[in-house]
Amino acid sequence: SCFGDVMNALEKKSKHVPYRNSKLTHLLSGALSKGSKTSLIVNVSPSELYIEETSHSLAFAGRAKNIILGPAEKDKGEIFYKDLQSEIRTLKNKLEKINISCKLKDELISKLKKRPSK
Image (tube, rainbow, N blue to C red; front, side, top):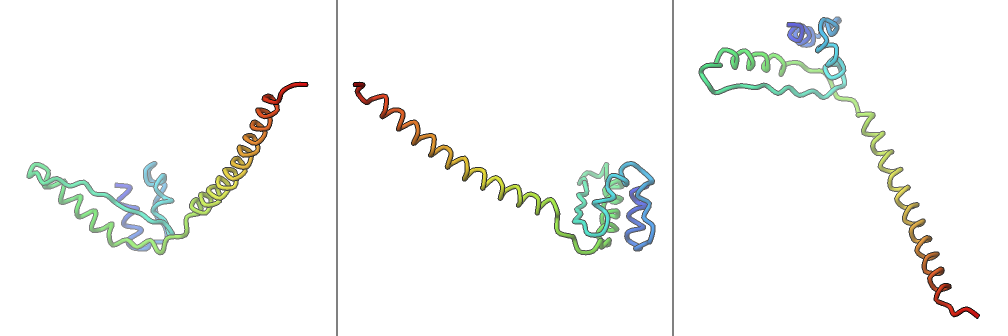
């Protein structure tokens, strides 16, 4: 399979990894390249009906386990997320100040309305 070819190339640390051989491997190329954290979930069955498929799945998982992509890079999305959180805190503080200002104005208007007119 194309995914198996990619796994073989990654395992052998080949200079060329055939990501473009299928839509799936092309789509996963970012997750399967250096600097990525990747997990593989393998579905197995305890039923004797599926023993062959389970053994193939476990063999594939064993091969995948041997692939080392290198240390994962810091996620740039995480930095962007922290920046957004900081901006949200700033905007919440500004909104709180505006709400306090509005309450004070409302109280002042209410007091002025309660004053007896001359």
